[in-house]
Image (cartoon, rainbow, N blue to C red; front, side, top):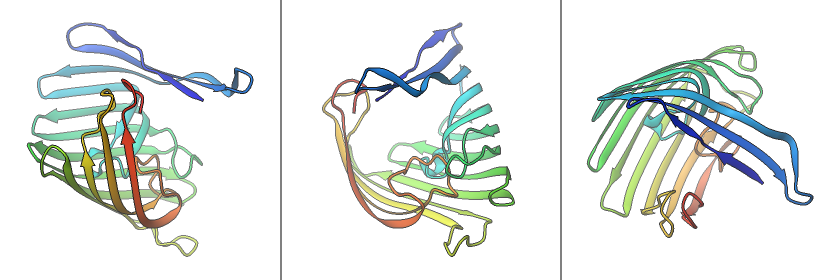
Length: 234
């Protein structure tokens, strides 16, 4: 069983100090596993009108493709400017890339729009110094989501990189086309959503993706659900 705690300290009206503590416990004998207890996030966050900055070992997601390209941690800095239209810039080093084989130098820039029923965005990300692909992976992504009403939504994400086919697999692109019904919220018990999606996710190329239900150079149909059992338990 893995337990995650996320303490937060308020420094002033604009700044907080944040952490995430993880503990792995073997329920058979109530002992810690080899991973033990460790801090895997530790960052300072400043929030102002139309500007947010995070510095340290922080959570990072490329929102334009809803985490399909990257949804993981990084050590560095992330800055977001704007309100309805937002520009996000990030620089640092990833935690794990290519099935946890190695870390990577990381640069990213994305523009996102969200107002009312429509959200859309585009991004560029650069993963540098990768031995397993002999250099640098440059990835471009675009995504959109439309909320028809309080329950129905449709979503499409697409990403493409500069890599050639590897071991007979086409690893240049990835995509997700999804229909969702429901109003799932992590902090609200009783909320739920169900979804149907057609995905091509190359987890050996797209590290730390939100969409981890398909592994390897794989594509296919998925159906799934998320249900809130208690506050922040789902």
